[in-house]
Length: 87
Image (tube, rainbow, N blue to C red):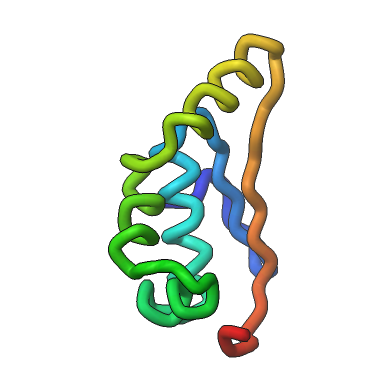
């Protein structure tokens, strides 16, 4: 669930790989895309996209987010509204 919602955007505060995965899944759903559509667009397997969305395949991201938090940084994913189809 987004941490902030306005008519033209959704925002997620990212503190972990799982948060980043939720933001990815939320952005995908906001666009009305299936995992299959996004995976094809990215030229990756749908199962790998599923792992990314669950945060289970993101050790490097987890460590990076941890380092950023230790440095006092806030990481936020903002998704603007866009009704366009997948490219």
